[in-house]
Length: 309
Image (cartoon, rainbow, N blue to C red; front, side):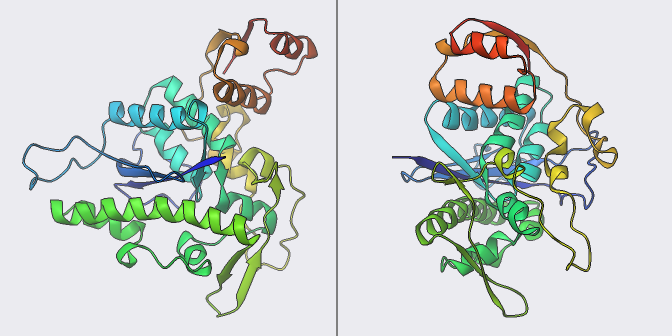
């Protein structure tokens, strides 16, 4: 039986309105959570002080972020979970990658961003727009967010005392749980329902691949959507993942971000766990590092191949 894990994180500041984020001043991560379909949960935050009444750290350290990235990587590459997010391709994994200078951790974020299931991005590629997690949860009859909180409120509450920080921890865990529950509800019903601000009820039937919603890599292959009816043209869907590309391949408006420094490795995929091998192979194909049939044949035959990631 396929296992799923909903993931969400909170930051110490609000995300910029443009595609270019300042690499010198990355968004700090205050906390994060993952909730799985087999009823397991994990919440991350900075090291707690011995006095339970003292505040938690303002942000997680780079080392703590790397440990969290490693745990997420293990979930999908070794333990067989499919990660689920709401706008994680453009936001959550990008925030994670910018919160550390560890190249392996950054590369793992790029691979996970392109190969997990981001329901918001799948909808965006299919309809030309997306809806918020709160609207999606309400539309599936799952209720609203914890204490009607949102990301901006969570930023302010985290700067207060331990009592308010505890509420933010419950909020991020609820968002991770709701992400999982929305996916399960949509897959069961066959469509996502939501109510627009105008009061109009709407539905979206997601595209599927092997019985699951599309990953960002797969969603980018969908036909272009006619958005001529919109008053304001939506941002290009390719821009959501521009941060995962080497600097020279990014759109001009997205070049001011973390650099992508390829690392040369030699691996034999046949000696790695199946899920990890699949993730590495997906990244190689996505990054167009394995275009020659000879190299692909070597991988399939179990021979070591030298490549860059």
